[in-house]
Length: 243
Image: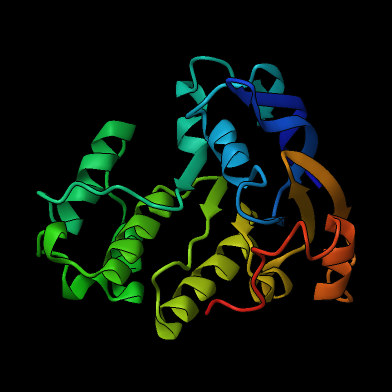
């Protein structure tokens, strides 16, 4: 199994506060890897580091055998990133936004982009200004923007926020097909139901540190997660469902 990504003893501080500390893990081809932990655990920091949006204070990030340093341009098309709270240009339509992103990446908006619009139902409002879209519609546009260029590694930070159950199912189907094609996903969530459904491995993270890496996801239960993360007192923000 090919290793697409490796973090080696990565540390990031925000002034004196720990973002992540001495974390190490790898991501393999065709793998769905979940970062699971309470709010403020370090999940978003980890994804931003891999996306090249922030830089580690120490340690190394290796993507497809290339070290990610201050200039992430060489690997930008290998990665797709959906932040927890995506900021979209309200003066553009969804279609214009995808074309704009394609131009920034030096690519053309592919047939896959239009296929995504069809599957996600974005084609029904693709000519409307983003400013007029609902929260759920914006989330679908942001998701399409993260994956339309077919990156080898997709980083998803709470991707189901704001989506109704029908939109969640459409996104889920896309993700499962995407993985079956040999691509890989790092998925950040604090919702246990999503962990069980998608994960090949689960990285438990809290207070910026990796507490455990779980391989036997099939037999995982919520109580086991709590024990490994230090109990309910430390993980009171974890949720059993998306409600």
